[in-house]
Length: 139
Image (cartoon, rainbow, N blue to C red; front, side):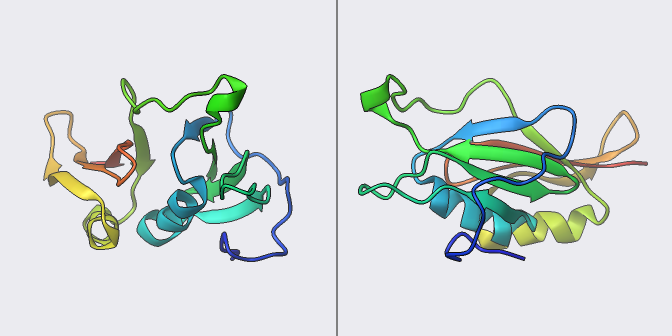
């Protein structure tokens, strides 16, 4: 498993999944390290940081899927905006443990795991970058 501080992380890796979330956050290198700790993600590719510590691309594998991310680059027409109108959902196998891991790592627990009307157990969180996360475990 690689970490974002490894110097030998490649700049590209195979993409997993049919739809890939691409996040823009302020501090993508720190966010990727957080996602490793909170959700068990693996950094599989990363472009080196610029002189301001920003990176144009990080690729993570998480729960069988790819998530990609970068910092904002206002000077290239990509100014900072807060995340809104979406959430990322992890299909959990041990939702209680996975939720606790994320909260212990620093996520805000918005809704602890609970049985929902549709029959699954669901939980919701927000990470330090404002990204909303859900966890869902089948019936």
